[in-house]
Length: 324
Image 1 (spheres, rainbow, N blue to C red):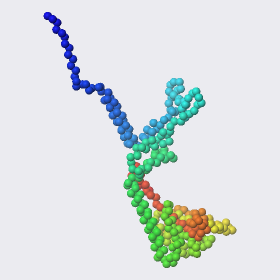
Image 2 (image 1 turned 120 degrees about the horizontal axis):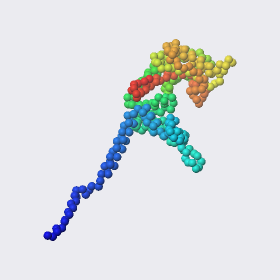
Image 3 (image 1 turned 180 degrees about the vertical axis):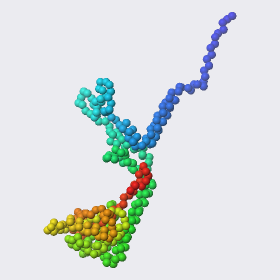
Image 4 (image 1 turned 90 degrees about the vertical axis):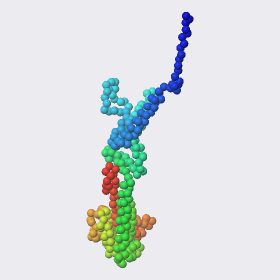
């Protein structure tokens, strides 16, 4: 019997021709892990308070010296480079200063988490004594802006009412009709400045004297009645022109302007203004002229009564309440 040939048939599965291994899965898993860690970091930065952020910034701040560590070994844990890093050993020794990333103000490193908020946010980094207690974050939200706007409008309305009342009282007295030019009402950054000024040929004060005439006294009393119901402090200052004035006793423009301011204070208190509201009496002589181009002009001789603006309330982020 003849031997039968042995036939070996190999069958290849064509369905697996496209398989090239699973390495891409590992790369994809690494990518997803990195993305998860990134978003977790963003969430931590957004949810952490300032104290935790400060600690985190301090942790990543480069530092070479560690005074608290002591190890066993040749150097006993002491770091040689305290102030800088030696750049070489063969040439002249020089120090390379480390970057001060986050050293001056650690919270500045993480202020990017606030960039998505409204433009009304202001971050203040206090480098003074208050910095030890934390960084003040002042947020002017829409509610705070509306509150500030209401107070500003109320302030303007109060000033307009005071101005109208003064003008109305002057118009109600015929003897003051010709004194309109002697009264100036000006809204300054500090408050409403009410000034009684001299004019050529119509002086409100006796020359070289702090004695106040009847017409000037009447104007001061009108001003006092207009502001007596308010609570804002009042600053009274006296001014003179630059004409030299000096008596033998040494009494000059400084003393004269101070005495006129104090005389005005006495009239206002007698007219009903509470004494504690007078916060300052000043004699400025000719140092703050109304007409700087002509220091000897008559209008430089004046009395200024400054009604200070009330403080604008602030809304704090922590409490959300209005504070004076």
